[in-house]
Length: 377
Figure (cartoon, rainbow, N blue to C red):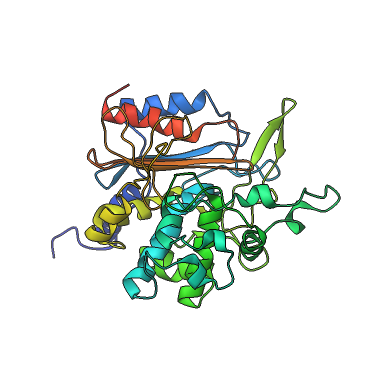
């Protein structure tokens, strides 16, 4: 050992190890691109109101991770990288992955029929397969249209519909929207049913299957398929809307308790791990992921993105390019939340935007941010 060995040297050694780890976990938002993102968000969110969390990953390295605003108006807790937001329809990629894992296990096939999985399902769904459900080509009716009108005297969380009740509504219906495979129509019903298919095939609750087969293996310790009274959401953000110029908590709606179509809560930190698993093929292998990213092909009108433009769809992902750049992406909208993930597969770029307020277009904001990093803005 040299002359400087001792407690002081040990301290320097510890700091030398700790500082890189701190940087890896909390990447500094520096540089002109980061300043431009800061400016974008500053025009949308002030410090003491519901806000947003933004993550930019380039070639597996987080180059921007930052929270803006607060999780709720009671505690005014600042949003950060571990704040959990309801993902809404960004959940669908996890539901699709769960189905794919069960196909790998030999417990499901993509051509299995809904009526074989759930005997007694009406004749209108006789040709609906697991693949149709994944691709939004099943023709199942929208469960939101089948629900009875909400009783305003009943607290919303006590009146929420759950997955099993959605299945019963679909079973009582005698007509689908169209013949399976003949058209494409975005279907929350289909993904609620897929969550139930996972339960039936695995013999385990859907939330538990996601935890044990996806979240825990990937280290996504804060991510949860939330079920009121059964589990909790750590570091939870609550949804808000602006009404008559004032913020109001609008965290729950009659459809906020279903799981397969939108029930997962997650954070920037955990979404970064999800992105890394997709990049490195550590959950789904190359062949499986290629299948998930194969567009559905149906006659008639092509799939459409929220803005009405043509948008291919695979298993839980929209697939249309943006300004010539290949991508897989999804958005989520539910009471008080707006979310988006944009993965530019050939550019090695991922942008995640999570908002606990309903007045921000998360998908459009993510594209503006992506444009800064790709060099299109």
